[in-house]
Image 1: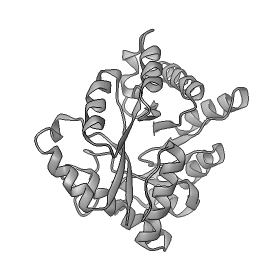
Image 2: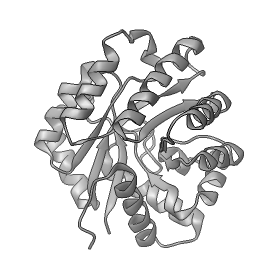
Image 3: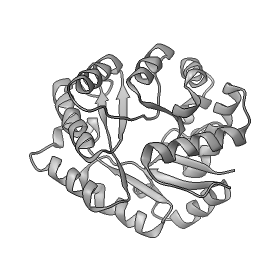
Image 4: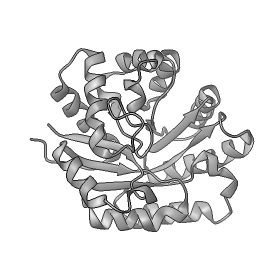
Length: 262
């Protein structure tokens, strides 16, 4: 069984002391590739350093919506230049909208649109963070696709309703489920996990956050994506092996890397 964790943050300080042991555990769990997301340009070098250590890691570059206030005239060039210079950069993000934790909605929209344009110019998918902002996000994506070339990407750590899920599927996006899908009270997310088409489904940890049951409350790590996979497979009525194979294939197609399927 081969798994791909499509969203990690293992450059955080909480992993500094035992990253090699964490790698050994994800290898033992069957994780053969990871996509490292990005919060802000200051992280670019630290993420690249990890990619230099671990060839099974691809990464994204971008600015998180909760850091939208850090956007400057130079930020777009930083993201664009990095996306061009390193072939291991497979996406722009994480970017998006978060109206739950911040109220600078217009600034977030502006910064997201800037990164949307970069993704389209570089022909790279987006990693989208969307919290309490589904309608605004859909409106921006619909408008962009009507006036420009279509873009694609993933709604990461998805927490939306089935109706919102269908909305982003109609726009052409993938949907990625995190450890939240294993939580007992996450009924709407679990219903969403049942309706995503096979070829648009992804899994992730979003580590170090949101450790899945049975590790809830602990530091999350890539090896725990197997618990996400197990729960999503259960919800969809398929085997864990089939779920792993399908989501790994989807990750390769979306992000443009390849693995040797066993």
